[in-house]
Image (cartoon, rainbow, N blue to C red):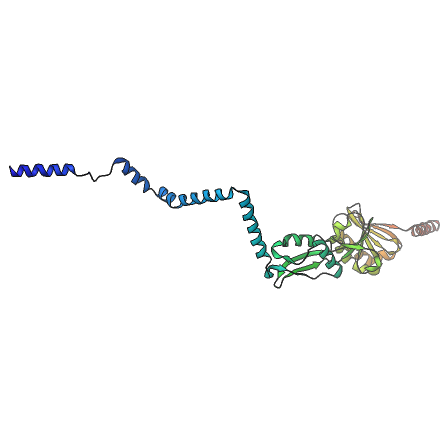
Length: 299
């Protein structure tokens, strides 16, 4: 009887204790909180969201925004205008006095300036845009110096056009205007429309015509297609469109053997490369006809 009573007492005590297992809702909430995305969101997203909400509330006022912008600009200006970032002078190397003056005018820099306010590629493009400048390099040297290294175009040829005389480099790029031919008598002369675009070919012709010496006066572009070599005494060598250098060398070789250009010849026509045609001056033609008539009358 006592054993039965004791057993019943234990059963009643067990029924009175709370069940240690969680409820279904609590179990699902615990599993949801253990999800990596939710844990990251609570650890990072929630603080970030609070910060963004606070910042948005603060910046909602235009007065506060203007104040922050002013503080930023002031701090930036204070940093950029520190002595180590200031450019005080411009140094130009490799350019003549006139070109250096043009560079200073075209850049229009009001020094001193902060290096942060200098657009070096844009400055270089302005300098290279000058006709006498072939290449340019722009950099900032220690000590607040804006260094400009210039390579000028070297005049290689004189071009006579309707606009007057101009100096060109070996590629045909414009260098400068030329007031008088006597200022550069040592440079070869080309003329005609479009001659500047074939300056490199003209220089090869001048090199081939070197045996002609002082007799060479210049080379004329005809119809933007071919060249005429002009000599003294009004002589001309009409070159073909294709391979004009080889044709000129051929004429010079023939002249050295048969003194072709030393005779009373007006034009040597090589426009048809396979055939060399010679046109004599009028007095020479008259003499030729006179000699022919004499020979005919003698028979």
